[in-house]
Length: 116
Length: 116
Image 1 (cartoon, helix red, strand yellow):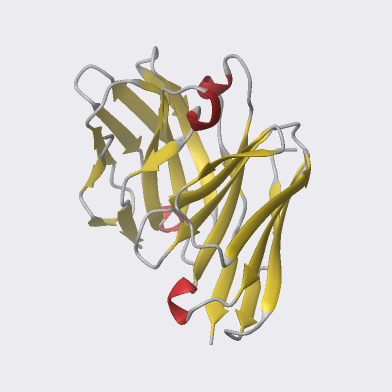
Image 2 (tube, one colour; image 1 turned 120 degrees about the vertical axis):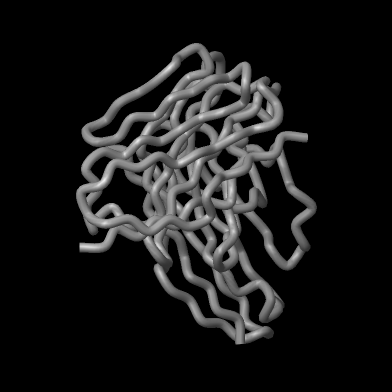
């Protein structure tokens, strides 16, 4: 059974600091891994999608890496800003057929607070 | 347009009421999902529709009844809910078919449901 773990559960940093969020998964049979941002009481905003065959993806100040063989992904945020404060969720899309294709398995998230 | 729209944003209902949640997307996605998210927890999959047919029901109680009237719409009919059903209900969509497992999932902003 696929399990996704995110460390740390919470992180508080001063503005301007670079930071790394960690995600690990137990089964390497995945299509891809997706990082999401969730503001309190809101839906999920997709940040980065990294395919199982890729090593990293970049979007602006965000960089996600994937090491499928070791079951790990990191989300690097450069020059953090107070507006980056949110919960960050990683989710893996497990390999499957028919109706199970594409189902996402989520970690519990890392709650990030960036202080001015 | 990469938007998934959910209505209403907030809903308060009594335990004897019947209500419906609505989700709409116009990205041509043929897979649509309902997730339930309790406070400080990750989203949990409830139902998956693939090509307008129910393909996965994650042992959800019958007081939740999904419906997919066409390829753009997904409803969740609610009846005789319990206070513990109060949560954020998220709708998502993604592509289906060959290669679809590699594509991105998009989420709506959710409906905050309170059962009194």
